[in-house]
Image (cartoon, rainbow, N blue to C red; front, side):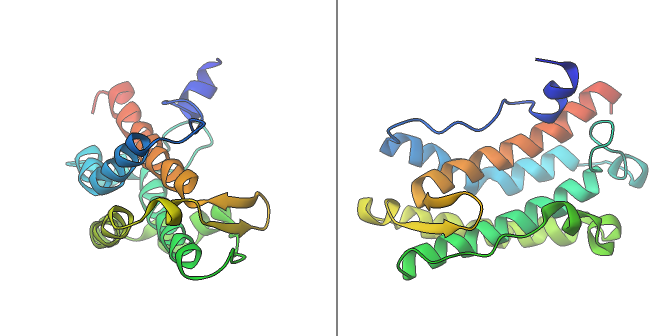
Length: 177
C-alpha cells in the first residue's frame, strides 16, 4: 500500500463479513454509540490552525471532516429509518465533496457538528438496538450502489466513524500535536 493510500485509508477499506453475525452488529452498534465521544477526544484542544489543517495532501481539513461526519451520518440515519418504514425505498444520493466545500463545512465551528452527533448517535444507537433479525435484512435502494441491507449499512457507518477519527488521530501523531 502506498503512503498516500495509508493516509486515505488508515484502518483499511470497508469490508463487511459474509455472513454478518449478531456479534458483528453489536460491535457496530457499540461503535456508532461511541463515535461522538471518540471524535471529541480526537479534536480535543486543537486550535483553529490545527482544525483548518488537511489530514493529508489534497484532503479535507479537520473542520471539513467533522462536518462531513455529521452530514454523512444524518443521511445514513434517515436512510435506515426509511428502510425500516418503507418497502425498499429509493434514497437520494448527495455529493459529499460539494457539501464539504459549502461555507458552513469550511468555516463553522466544529462544536456545532459535535453537538449534533451527540444527539444523533444517541437516537441512532437506540433505534439500532431495538431492531429485530428481520428488520436487519430490510433494504433501501441506493441510486448508485443498488439495494443496501440495513445490517451492512450499520457496519459501513461504524467503519466510517472509525475511519475519519483515524484520519484526525493520524494527523495529530504525524504533527506531534
